[in-house]
Structures are given as C-alpha cells and as structure tokens.
Length: 108
Length: 69
Image 1 (cartoon, one colour):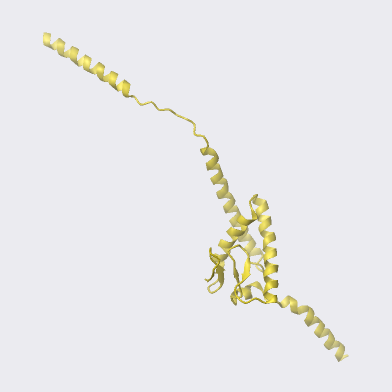
Image 2 (image 1 turned 120 degrees about the vertical axis):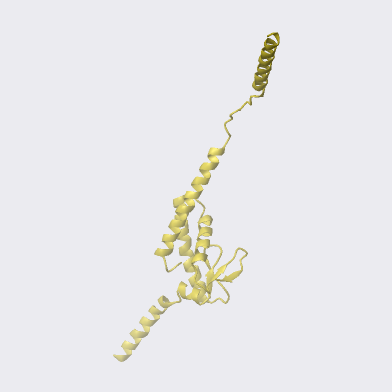
C-alpha cells in the first residue's frame, strides 16, 4: 500500500514539475531574459533548454496577440511589435534587461 | 485769384495721378487650390488615432496577459 502511495506521489510530482517551470517574471528579475528591441523576449547571456522553452512559448503567444491588434487596426504586425517594445521597456523594473536600438543589452 | 485756380488744378492733377499710381500698384491675389494638403492632414490624423488606439490595446493586453508580459 505504501509503495503504491509513493508511486502515485512520484507520478504527481512528475506531472506537476513542468508546470512549476520558471516564469517570465522570475527569469526577468534574475536577469536571465530581457525585453528585446523587437517586442519579444530573448535570453540575455547563458541559455538553457528551460529558458529556450520559456522564450519560445512567451514569444509565440505574444506574436498571436500582436497579430490580433495589427489586424484590428489594419497595420503591420511589425509596427505593433515595435510600439510594444517601447512600452515594455518603460514598464521594466530596475535591474531588468532591455535591448537598445543597436541591439546591446542594457540594465534599467 | 488766378493762381488759386492753378493751384486747385495742380492739386487735382496730383490726386488723379496719385490714384492712378495706386491703382497700378494694387496687388493681385491669386487663390489657387493646393494640390494635396487635405490628404496629408488626414493621414497624420488617422495615424495618430491608430497610434493612440494601438497604445491603449497594448496597455490592456499587458494587464490581461501578465504571464507573457
């Protein structure tokens, strides 16, 4: 009975772990990812599979949202993303990273 | 008496030539419809409105989707 219980516990942990993967906010506060000048996020220095996954997920969701706004206003998605980049940079907390116009990482 | 008439005549002549000169100098103002300023103004206005609208939609988006912004 105890073995079964332990097995179940291990199984739940296995299923629950991916959900507790690093969040965007954590990654930003820790300086792992930053706001790129494109309106999307990017890894600042050292990459890892977990970070890559986060970046890809967040960016694809962002792209969807930008596309919806672009379509509603009949403008190019790049224009929406560029505007978002400016606004996102302004919203960052002190110490978080953003990319300047020349693509260099800057700390706010 | 005689000189008074001459003076008057001279004055009249001076006034006449003066007015003639003035008439010659009257500037002519030609009003010409400009070619495209209305379109340009309209574009600026629309672009501004879209920018404001996009900004507002982005702000809402940042609030709604905190996980990805």
